[in-house]
Image (cartoon, rainbow, N blue to C red):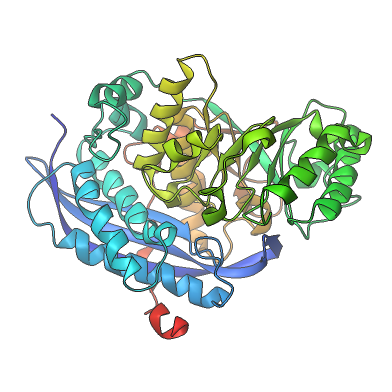
Length: 465
């Protein structure tokens, strides 16, 4: 039987993160944003107290892209999501499994956030961060690591939120996992990033030997095609086997615009270097348009959803529309990632191919990147977008003592090559060996004394009134 727990405390903190370069995706450019840190204390039945932690960027204009809201206001929406979730989780006073606790709160959380004009994707952020910290504490109480703990279903994951599955589907999937010893880095090329020359796509110092590249799209077929043609020339110049994914971040207005890009990929010889390397296209249209638009003849290539993945039934709904895959992001919920990976495996056993991918938006060096990397390695994500290592200068404003502690505990993940300690990429891969530490993929917690409390958010209802 999975261990049962009850929460004693949840605390939120944040730390400013200044970007080393602007990162433009969709309709927003990020130069700085806070990083959230969650700290929970739990009591595990028969085992006593334990403390766990999680971390994630508070990213503007991704969870909530409404044009009438400023970037800062969408960050406030995430802060409010955290506060609402904290109240709901702490209100559960009895002992229950980690997944039962999550399942008892997620629906109420979405409803409570909707009353405050917080969309479903942003509503899930609060539970996602609390769940990761709870799992970290639970694993520490059980004196086991993430991979062994999840193989044995320490969280008690069942099919209560995914009625298309059976409990046995999840148990069998978890028991059969063999975590990957290395995960390839997928190098992001943002819309404002240089393409040619120093700092460009073919610059080895910039791409860190990556074999996979993620290319952002603007939503304009002509300008996207011209930019992709330039990137294709740079990939050809690398002289190694490379693959690409395309990410529109909801920018293509409709199927007609998307079809125009597909026609160019199919017929424009200048795009052959991209088309021949293309694995899949991510979140092409706005989430509400996607739900109303079967891909039909556009689905000659593989498509996945990301921002449209805001509920436990999103993947089955997307499958019915012609989508083959879905992203895993710990900021959207680790349990949902595991449920969706189970679905992909089960559906693929029927002869068609379905898959789950690793798409990083919010992971910085330390807790965030380690926990998301471990999740991906566990569910079989062979390459993951890891943009944090080149948009932020190493650990950013993290105190030196905390940085040294992470580097000492996880020497396969961090190194100092003369520019300070930063993510250590080995021939295009990240190694996962040190993630087999007691707890959720970390031997180290943040220096809590160096963090400031989570800022009090304003009301989206007032902003949108």
